[in-house]
Every structure is written in structure tokens, then in C-alpha cells.
Amino acid sequence: MAADLTNIVKAYDVRGVVPDQWDESLAELFGAAFVEVTSATAIVVGHDMRPSSPGLSAAFARGAAARGVDVTLIGLCSTDQLYYASGSLDLPGAMFTASHNPAQYNGIKLCRAGAAPVGQDTGLGQIRALVETWLDEGAPAVPAGTIPGTVTERDTLAGYAAHLRGLVDVSGIRPLKVVVDAGNGMGGHTVPTVFEGLPLDLVPLYFELDGTFPNHEANPLDPKNIVDLQARVLAEGADLGIAFDGDADRCFVVDERGEGVSPSAITALVAARELARNGGTGTIIHNLITSWSVPEIVREHGGTPVRTRVGHSFIKEEMAKTGAIFGGEHSAHYYFKDFWNADTGMLAALHVLAALGGQDGPLSGLVSSFDRYVGSGEINSTVADQAGRLAAIKAAHATRDGVTLDELDGLTVSADDWWFNLRASNTEPLLRLNVEARDPATLTRIRDEVLSQVRA
Image (cartoon, rainbow, N blue to C red; front, side, top):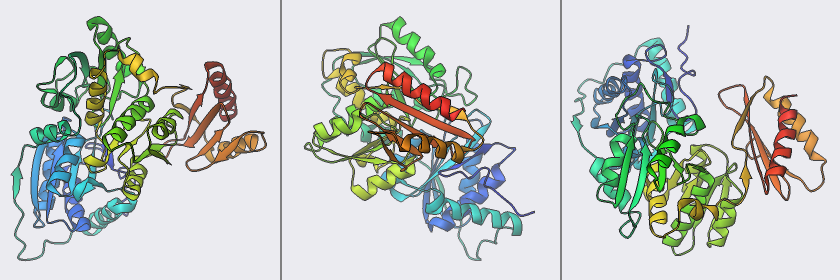
């Protein structure tokens, strides 16, 4: 039977259960295929704190080095630290992580030199096909006379921290008390170095690197995983709380009342700051489930908002195409032109600290002007016939007065005082609903109406 890796090679990365779905022998083949497809002569490799990460990343490095490619191992790092290494060293990179997935999972995020993403259409499909062929037919022998590449170790943490600190002026901020929940993930590795020397009273929560996630899943998008952070912010009387996901490329913010701050409000706040840094002009990317607040605030600050589909490859593609200075997603991924168009939650966190520490009011007051509407958050419904349900809901709204429809990504229906987006999951039999409105009563009405149609 022909090899088929579609179960672990996703749209943007490799991801699956170790060792059931993939192991070190497969990682070695991925290393060889990666250098073949990218024509790399040197690469950089990093990994997170999962128990399987050191072995998998070493195997990948072996596969690459055997084909004459020099490998720089940066060891334990966050995903955005790997992007920093790829950008600053101008090398293709591989990051071993399964982000917020449970402990038995691992994966690889790949990029070309300068942190340019490798997705299904930009090399990942070719890498998968090559590995499948080798599994069926045996990997071709290394050409005679090939001198194996060198494998060297390099510490990039201090350089990463200095680069980020050079992009946000935090020199004048007032003293702040901040609780940081690293979720036993890579934030526990990067935060102490990045925050060093700032006037912060840092209260660390779950900074011990532990890929079995003994305290809670490292996925702050799920409200149950920030409960400890919210309680600690209140107990400490802290100015704010910050939570990172497992590979620390996303950050979530909690205000002094223990209330979660919408990632759309963070997108709008950072967009305003980046526009000010760039002379009040520039393009800002936002995906179509971010709040109406984002494009409004971008325009008010002299910028040009550009709306994209959900997903980092679409954001990065649009950033490269438009020369955008910043991009934000409602999933708390934040992308910066000055960070090779890659996403870094740490840089967004520094912006929040700089904004809060540069004035006297509490965080809740500061973000209120960036959060003008009420949102439902993402609501998932298990649906067997996704296309049929979407078509029925489109038909139900198509004839309504004062309503516009668009299908950039799923179905977006907009009126004067509300909008909703309904889109199918790429990986599960789910429809994902996001609703926003000018007031809570309208939100409840539209949400319940659409959910009753979805689940009919």
C-alpha cells in the first residue's frame, strides 16, 4: 500500500501523535526532503519542551546534514525565536513543536530564509510527496563524494530579546506588576530574558518547562486555561496578566479586574502604535473575524485596513504583497513587518506593557476605547453536511433588506448594527460562528437565530 502522510501533513505544518503517527526515522526523511525542496545549503533548527522534541529535531538535523547541508541547532526556543534565527541568519528553519496540542503530539513548522512561511502550496506539499515516495521506494543514496554538513550549536535567546526590545520603546514606562502564565511552555524560557531590566514586578506562573502540561493545556484561547491567571491577577492586585501558548508565539492579555482583553482590542491598540511609529501611515492586515473596531481605528489613525481570510499563510501573503506594517488575527497571532512579517506574541506583549506603562490609568480603561462592540467569541457546532447548512443559511439571509453577504471565507452576513461569519473547519466536521453587534440584546438575538439554523 502506498505511503500516505495526509493525516500528519496539514495545511501549514506537520503535526501528529508520537510515535504512533510519526517518529525519528520519519523526522530524518523530513530533514532530507526539506533541504531538497528548498535547495538549502544551511538551515537552522529549534525545538520546544516536549519530551519527544530533542530526539525528533536531532533526527531532522541528521537527515539534512547527511545531504551536505550545514545545520545550526539553537536548542530550546519559542517559535518566534526560531523565526528570529531564520530572519537574522537568513536561513531556512524548522521548529519542532505542536503548539497547544496535548503532550503526545509533536510537529514541525517550516520556513524559508527570512522566516517566509512554508505551507501546502509553498513547498510542504512537495516535501510530503517526496517523503511518501521515499517510504515506498527507499530514499535515494546520498551522491558519492558528498561531504556531510556540519552540525553546530548556537544560542540566540539574547539576540532575540535585544531585537524585540529594539522595536518597542519601553524605557520610560512606570513600574508595573504583571502575572505571566507560561503554561509550562516556552514562555518560561523567553520571558525572563526579554523582560530583564524592565521596571516590572514579575509574578511567574508555571514557568517550569514541562511538555506533559501538568497544570493546564497551553491553549489560552480556551477560557478554562486562563482561570488560574485571572485568579492570580486579582490575588496579587496586579496591573495585568499575560498568558502564552505552548510554543509562546501567541499571547493573551487579562486586565487588572481579571477580565480577558479581546485579541481584536489588542490588534487595534498595537495597530495604532505601529502607525504612530511609521509617521501615521501604513497598511494594517486583519482577518475577517476581527472586530469592526479594528478597521475603524486603523482609519482614524491614518492607516489603510486590509481584510483577509483566517489563517497565517493568508496574513503573511497579504503582508508581503501590500508591504503592511502589522497584521492581527482574532486568534491572538500578531505579525510585524519589522519581524520578517512573522508572528510574535512577545512583541505584542511588549507593546501592551509600553502602552499601559506610558500612562497612569488602568488597563481596562486604556483598552475600552479599542473595544467598541460586543462579540460572541467563536462558537463551534458539529454538523455533518457543512456545505448544505451554509447554503441554507445563505438562502435564508439573501433576501433580507439592509443585509450584505460575502464569501471571502465561509459566509459573512452584515447589517448596520451586527454581522456574523460562519465558516467550515478544515480539519473537523464543525461550523464555526462568530457574531458581533452594537449592543448585547442584538448580539443575543442574532447569535440564537443563526445557531438555531445551524443546528436545525
